[in-house]
Image 1 (cartoon, rainbow, N blue to C red):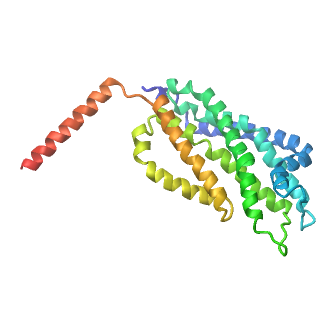
Image 2: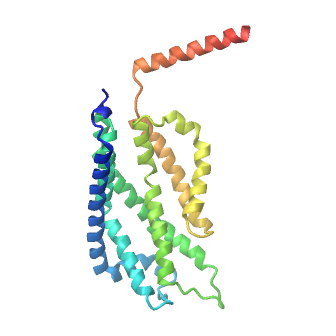
Length: 268
């Protein structure tokens, strides 16, 4: 019996565990929501700061519907609650999938949880401090004497939150691919062989995730993703699953056998 078979639970117990973990996640988000709502104006000022800086401090947000400001603050508090609860969310996710891992793989769970949070913060920070200034400068360049930019609270929150979450999650790529390599699902050779397809997929994902036809934002997401893909190859090389000598000998024997059979078939 394998280690994974020993840890198998009935399907109903998996559902029960999933329910309990989801309840804890919702509680964590709820607590974070309350905290974020208390500081909603300050949070919105922080979120709005890159745009204000690009516009020279001469901008004021508007809302065109009477309940727009209220619901915008509610959505902002919810997003803030999710961010505050991120450590709990990552922890519950990794602990839920832990029964499907071997014992030597489980020792990477705590580092995976910590690194998930770190990569998410780095990705969101990159979007906030690097992408936002250049992206806003590009978009506001279309303003003129007859066309004035009057950002709406609702539209700005939708745009900025989508961008920050997108950059936060795509920066998880090295961690995900390294863990997949550790579990034997992918290999360094596979990642290197399919690099050109990965680049194509990266540009497609960047075009789909970034809102609107903003070429600058798309490039500023695609370029770091290509770097992260190369970092994933390095991580897979360092921490990926190593083949033991028996596996390598067996593969060499199978390869040699296949070559001999092919030569014999060619001679016939």
